[in-house]
Image 1 (cartoon, one colour):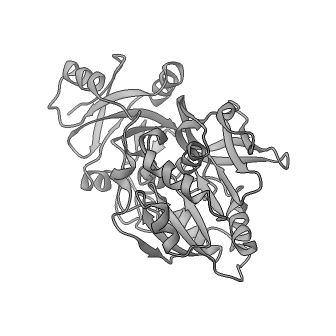
Image 2: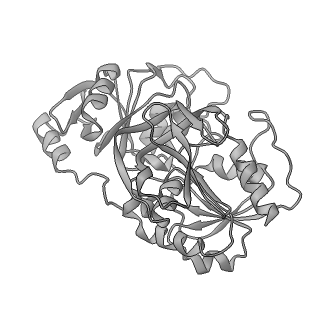
Image 3: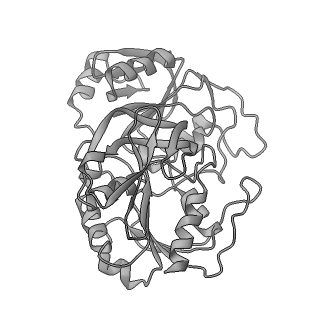
Length: 372
């Protein structure tokens, strides 16, 4: 049976189906990471999107229960050049095809992912429909893609956030990443779950924090009632303008002398709470090789990123300082509030997958809480 991927501009890709036999619609983006496909497909930030992997060979390490980044895969579809027929990793519990099928996620292989990536770069991220069960024609899929509402203004966070608060206690395995300097105070962090990755929570715990995770709609008053030493704003999917309640809560939290650290969507929400604006990038940043310059030190970090929106630098008030910029396109990658223990970054210092260049930011957050 032939799988069909049809983009809203009329592009048709034929290939081999794998994963679930079904039809899905989503926004097509590409990811340039060479490894870590398991962490990518379980990142809640991909809710509403189909991911095209630029690495040509995917599936060879299978799936294991230790490396997932959330309770399930969230993406709408998975597009690869070649799906490995064999799993060659001693840690694997099952193969990629079985895992995606079990969670209802369709995949398509034998696609010219290089040509597809170039098309997205030239024309931008766009809706597409993927059919892997032979039930839809090209014309039907094209209508579905063009009729899809997209991610702009949509609240995807409510679809991925936790329902109730919970404590997180698992730390990172020191086999894979060196243990950070210990904290002498064990600060209590309230982490807003906008679609948080597990490795962020692991890094906070490894840095000595006691972590309470709360749903995205938690009010500032309810968060403060937990008596935190600091507030963490997590990554998550979609348009930050689609979650105005989050920016309202953060704006209230900013009135208190409370350390705040945001990552990815959390960085964008902080920007909105400070009075700034966000906008959609042409094709976003998705991968593990984005160069970011720290303007305070002049050092360059190679970073892991996954976002389609950015903070508009010129919209920020004068008391907010841009601290990091992307060296590929000059977009804002970090900010801090002068006179307050508040900062954020657009990229993912917890990596998973990706380099660990920016792990020091967790230590910075801990030190702010200790000083408070």
